[in-house]
Length: 50
Image 1 (spheres, rainbow, N blue to C red):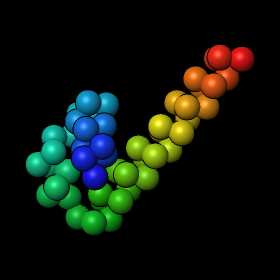
Image 2 (cartoon, one colour; image 1 turned 180 degrees about the horizontal axis):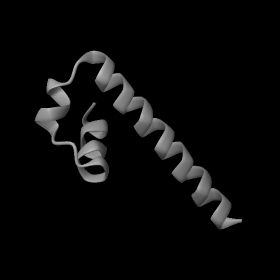
Image 3 (cartoon, rainbow, N blue to C red; image 1 turned 90 degrees about the vertical axis):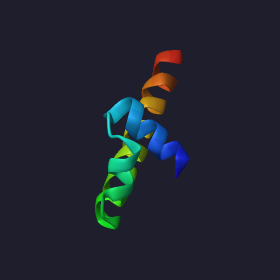
Image 4 (cartoon, one colour; image 1 turned 45 degrees about the horizontal axis):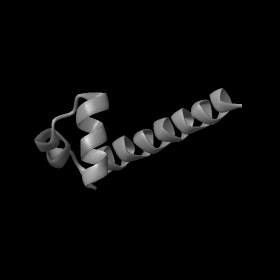
């Protein structure tokens, strides 16, 4: 949870108290979007290494 809050703050500019106030579905959507973005960034970094 803390890693998601950190990423949301620094990359998405969502303040931690705003993230906590969101409903469960909104939080789940944010977490899923973060997972997708991190995976895309990893793939791009791996591709750049090759």
